[in-house]
Image (cartoon, rainbow, N blue to C red; front, side, top):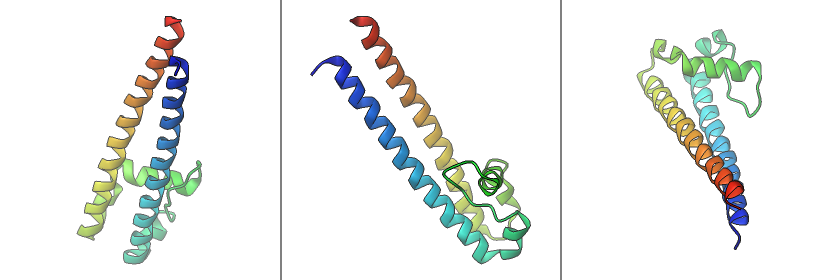
Length: 116
């Protein structure tokens, strides 16, 4: 197999994996938002009904802000605070992993391009 083909398959695999991880992330986030709505409906409504989304939306931005600014720490529910903290940590790790692997794929593409 030619190096260009190998790198193309690696890049395609990266894209598919990243899309599947995004799908999983949004599903986990939605489950957490649903738990917040169920356990603390007043807080959920006051926050503007945050909900992660596949595309940029007002509710998705509220959810991202809720996670990134650690607004969940104000909740009276220790279980939800822990679950949101775990979710935030997992999202940060995933972001770092995706960025590092994207750089590696890019460098492979550049190396193949300039080695021929």
